[in-house]
Image 1: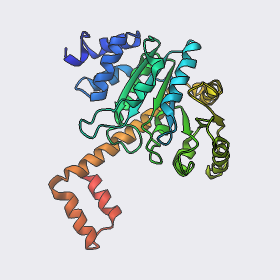
Image 2 (image 1 turned 30 degrees about the vertical axis):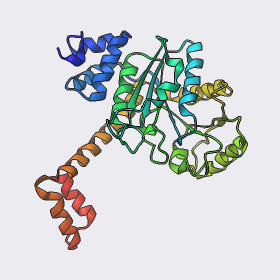
Image 3 (image 1 turned 90 degrees about the horizontal axis):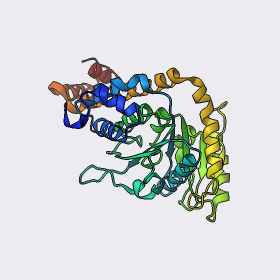
Image 4 (image 1 turned 120 degrees about the horizontal axis):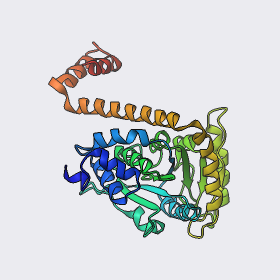
Length: 316
């Protein structure tokens, strides 16, 4: 038994308690998975048969759009409907400690003192895709714990924040009037991944203009792809949140119909690709036996193209 397993003798015992909804077990599992402790691979392995049931909804968009406040309002509506909720809030990392700056948790008061809600704040740790690898592992913990729906709010970095498309079932992209160049703040990448577009803070001047800009910008989506609905919400008053929840359920219906196996397979593909990218990045950082420097010299002399050098590097 190790400290990360707490009172649980084995990873299997811990996962059994997670599946039974024991909050101490969920917290212990998340702590281990976030830190990728020595027990984490065994915990992830024991969770695999229990995954794929929860609907995973991602929320992304530029900073200042009110993502946290809107997620908080949505939690209230979900709990009123009797649905259990796991919440993952990916906050910016402290430049000093590397830990999460817990702005999201401060705003999500609906998660307080409610056993039907479990929230975890995670540090982005500089991940350019808007997610840290730990967020994907925590999704598995909430999924195994049989939460009905998992809400994942990304850090809000803008165009690069598209990893959320790979690990969630429904993608909600949030904007707001008064953010400067509204649509340019979101960029094509976010518009492409959206299943639902939301203009939050709709009580502000310029909300209608932002709606029209978004509807016009949807012309960049690939031909044949359905255009997502564009909704208006005011998170502080709850206006439009019911309609947002209805749109999430409608977008999630085909995903649920896909079945557990298909959803798990899709997530596994992403995890393998992400792990492979991490291995390649580590190999490059290591610079084994000066291989990268030698290949760089070969590229400079014209002996190899950059693509040829990359193949050689990966083949080692």
